[in-house]
Each structure stands twice: as structure tokens, then as C-alpha cells.
Length: 436
Image 1 (spheres, rainbow, N blue to C red):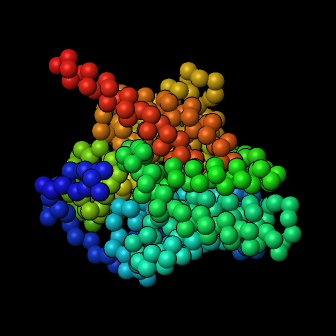
Image 2 (image 1 turned 45 degrees about the vertical axis):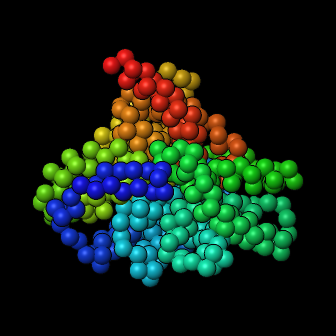
Image 3 (image 1 turned 90 degrees about the vertical axis):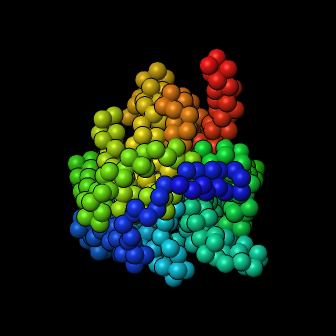
């Protein structure tokens, strides 16, 4: 047994690591590259090269504010190619930086792939990344220490696209303005992420989403005061459910099978993964090994697919983004035991409130709302349901603050919910202990 902590804020339980089947870093890179390439291959199977390139161009120049389904903009081929390319480039960056693949590596890669379905593209993300790089140079430090801030921080990439292509200014003004905005955002991300982690104490897994919501609110407020930036929009495709659900199911089953092939004890070791509350930082690859982690990721993916099917939702860019994020964080805090109360809480909220369970924003609130899974893992399923219930209301209203520019809107809402709910939970837990 061992204890791991982050600056006194987060403490987690470790199990004996010697029981894990060793998987080389090269093999991990190969498996992750395979999944990135499978997305590209899927895109090319269902569209022509000409349509894909034309679709990629449309994806680049269109506004990316929430909710913009890239399938509705550029088609399935371009969307999956964009997703696979961004994931593959991110894998290459980690490889060149000699990063040892762990849970946060996997979470960042699948989050990139997921949001490349509805907001991140092969142009707009790199300006924010460059901003983080300049911050690192200013600090005279190594970029490898900040690479996850850079990858997750691309949640504000729509800001770059909006300024560069979609405001009423001359091109020679728009381009440098977009560069300044994107670079300054990247420069601010790390110091703010460290500071704001204290607000929710690691119970909101999308900490950068919380940071992005605050930065986005400030930037959008400034631009709106000058008469720029349009309201959020909704592009939401509905006609590809069978095709996309089938592809996703095959993808996630392959993860489960791969984990079992690597280590036949993977299913038994899942019980150990289920014992972790999931509070940041909980790295399943480090704690329990790569093989049971990838099995857990596949199970999370199947749960995500089943949830969308059960509520009658649509499979498209945004919902795949939600499912991929659920899968990625299956390596970094989420598992079946701590996500189901959040899903149930959002479901109950939808039954009792004004909206329908299969409304676009509510489907996404359930999938991405699992950012609050550590609350269920730490305090029990009842508090998880409460967190999901409250989150389903908060997430529908905070997007107006950042004008849909922060793709991790659920991370923003999750940070607010956790910050308010934690002291309330503490009050009731003290009362429960006193009664005992």
C-alpha cells in the first residue's frame, strides 16, 4: 500500500503495483496510435477524399461555439479524419517529448479526439498550445511538464476561430487579434489551473474546463462590450445512429478484448479500480496497470453508448465527444461505480424539470456531467445523484457567460456545483457522525 498526494490537496490510496502485467511504453503508444488511425480509416471508408478535404475546410472556417456538430458542417468523413488526425498528432507530441504513457496521457488524448468532433480542429488548437509553450519558456522550464495543460487547454480553441473568421473586422486585424487572444489564453492556463483546483478540491475532474469557463467569461465579456461575438448555436445531426453506434460498440469491445489479451487477470483487477473514489489525481494506469485500465475504458464506453440508446438520444459529433471523454477518463478517475449515480441524477432531473431526457444539452449534461463522479465515489451514491441532479440545471445556464466559447462547459458547471456542494455535504456528514 502507498499514499500519493498533490500539494496537500489530494490524497489517494495506492494498491500494490507489482501485481500488474508490465506493458512497454512503445506498446502503449502503438495501441493509442491504432485507435487514432481507426478514426481516420472510418472517415475515409464513408466519404471520398475530395469531400473530406472540402469538409475539413468548412470545419476550419465555421464558428465552433457550442453546440456545433462537425458532422453537420463537414460530414462524417471530415469529422472523423479531423478527430483521428488531432489525436495522432497529440500522440506524436507526447512521443517526441518522451512522455511515459499514464492515465492523464490517455484522458488528454481521448478528450482531444472527442472534442475534435465538435469544436477543435487542425488549425484552431495550436495557437492556444503555443501560448502554453511561451509560458513555459518564460518560466524557463520543460514543456513536457505542462503538456497536459496545453492539450486540455484547447477547450478555448473556438475563441481563435471566432476571431479569425467570424467577426466583422478586416483580415489584417482579425489574424493578429486571434493570435493575441489564443496565445494569451494559453499563457494564463497553467497558473490559473493550479490556483482554481483549490476551489473544487479535485472533485471536478475537468479542472481545465472550470478554468476555461472563467477565462472565457472574461474574454467574451470584453469582446461583447465592443459589439463582437454572436450567441451560441445548435447544429445537431440525427440521421447516423445505427452506423455510429455500431462503430463505437466495436471500438469499445476491442478495448475490453485487448485488455484481456494483455492480462487475463484484467477483469478481476477491475474490482480494485472500482474501489477508488476517483478524486483527482487518481491514475488507474499507475495504480492498477494498463490492461485493466483499458478494460475499464471500454466498459465506460459501452455504458455511454447504452445510456444514449436508452434515453433515445442521437449519435453525432457532440455525443461521441461525450462518450470519448468518458472513455478517456476511464484511465483517470471514472469507472462504472462512480459514474452511474451522476447519470441517474441527470436522468431524474430531466424527468422532473422542464426539458426532455433526450434534449441535446441534457444528453451532453449526463455524459460530460460524470466529471463529478468523484463526489459519488467519495461520499456515496446518494450524494452522486444529488450532484447530477443539480448539475443538470447549472450546466444549462452557465454557457451564456462564456458565449459557448468554452467547449468544456460541463467542467465549468461541475466546478461550480462541486464548490457549492462540498461544504453542504460536509455539514450533513458531520451530523451523521454525531448521530452515530
